[in-house]
Amino acid sequence: MSQSDAWSALRAFTDARIALGRSGDSLPTEEVLKFGLAHAQARDAIHQSFDSETLSQQLRQLGLATLTVRSAAPDRDTFLHRPDLGRQLSEESRTLLDTCSDKSADLLLVIGDGLSSYAVHRQAPALVAALLPYLATLGISPGPVVLAHQSRVALGDEIGERLRSKAVAILIGERPGLSSPDSLGVYLTWAPTRQRLDSQRNCISNIRPAGLSCEAAAFKLAWLAEQAFSRRVTGIGLKDESDNPALNGNVRTVGRLR
Image 1 (cartoon, rainbow, N blue to C red):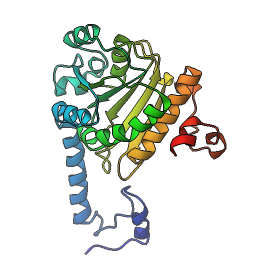
Image 2 (cartoon, rainbow, N blue to C red; image 1 turned 120 degrees about the vertical axis):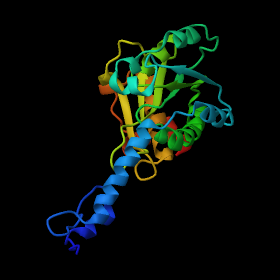
Image 3 (cartoon, one colour; image 1 turned 60 degrees about the vertical axis):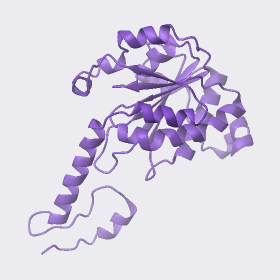
């Protein structure tokens, strides 16, 4: 028989696996089954196919053109075992971007599958839709959205460099946790090149219904983008102070749209 835990009331406040109770010297069967389900959902999120066609249709409904590229990782198994290949474009994709006539983006949006296509399909369209009004007010052109298969974060740097964008924001599926298979991350980089370091990016993470909402994430990204264009820097040189009411009183994004 399962014995109740005095800490179980705390479970109402978090998705973390706490106060699971016990049955004898083991976990209750229900919790063992829940763990197995969460593990299966995380694995499914990693291996789910990236449906760039459907995503492209959704973005076209928002008035955005799209380009589809692939990393140098030819398949999912290679992508998972060779992270370095996920950070560089395939030769065909390099040719596609080099010959692209539309290189007008101020802030290039890249949507990559990363480690959870499930997260991308659930969160990315809503995030882009929430972001567009901010970019329009700021006068920042997004250009065509690049959809990237088998992508790691740094792939956005090469894409941005080849399309000559001033900045790049890659929306990418984060590594699934046992309670968060649908978490999206955004990485913003000023003046993207293949030599950029992780310390030169700003990250917005845990974008999902149970975490940071798409609307809140869009505001943060717009705030960071405005500051990046003003200061010409991202990463450790640009602190996210979008939640600072004293500072936001003078910020154009907040004054017009919040």
